[in-house]
Amino acid sequence: MKNDTPANPLEMLAYFISLQIEDCKVVYVGTGLPMVAAILARKTHAPNITMVYESGGQDPVEGDMPWSVGDPFTWRKVAVMQEMAYSFGQSANGYVDIAFLGFAQVDMYGNVNTHQIGKDLTNPKIRLTGSGGNNDLSSLTENMVLVGLQTPERFPERVDFITSVGHLGGENSRREAGLIGGGPVAVITQWGIYDFEPETKRMRVKSLTPGIPFEIAQQSTGFELLRPDGDIPETSMIPPDVLEVLRTQVDPNGVFTTMPS
Image (cartoon, rainbow, N blue to C red; front, side):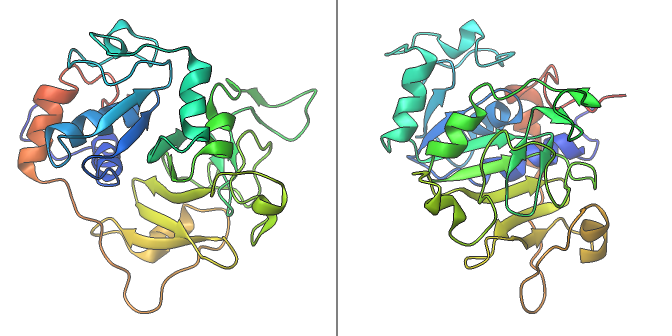
């Protein structure tokens, strides 16, 4: 890709995710754009983060972009290499500051589906990959950020299957179910960043991508979005120097940031 072309939606998503990462924090890293974002954050505004890969690698020495959390580059010269279950235990015991989770569907309360499209358990329209570590993270992590492209099909009022618990039915239902994590704190898409209204736990617009009106975000959503009082802030766009780092140092082969044809 030419480095003078505008950022595509996946590159924008990677940048938006990276902005959620503060310096000196422990970041739980899953496959895909979270890996891109964590490496980008380390190379730009957060050089002192500790990256915990889902497969158990603890803060590897920099190498090529891993193809997944099971790639050998996630273990490169690590001080500690654990089994996956122990990496989940780090979250359960409060040793992770922030984690990221992808989705096939997410609903107004931040519940995530990665199991199936269609509500018939015995005959779904599409069978998906299932949980992997998603449910562990969503149930155990205090600061969970959900990441994905925003379309009405991906943002239904209710997910077809709850793979990973968000705020369940809203209000205090998650806590009443006995889950120790605080539930998702944000959702990041190509159209903007969303949080959850503190009382109802319904998804709410926090900021929108420059040039994207609220109406576009709403048309891309299968339920009514809450909005803040007054003007909606604009999400910061990726600066040219950061885009250059992303394309030349973080994911030069476009493993996770090339748009599908």
